[in-house]
Image (cartoon, rainbow, N blue to C red; front, top):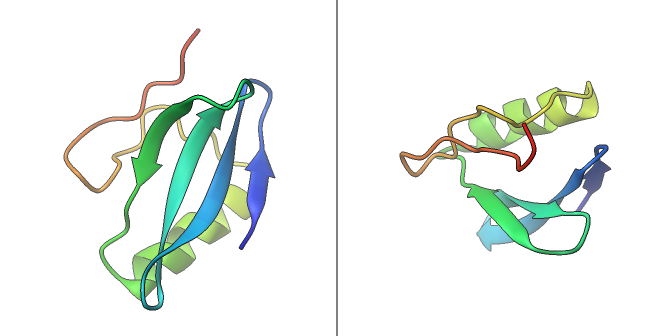
Length: 73
């Protein structure tokens, strides 16, 4: 599992449902901001590719009908 760090938050990949992983977004103080829950292996791979390329998750759909809002944005 990987961790991606940004200026004011970080994202941790976690086991979720067999080969599906979820991505938990935390403030630098360790408070949970959101969970990104992809619907398929392809979606998991797309999230990983975006995070690896430095994408900011502010404004992303979380897979549960909510939009991710990073505090201070």
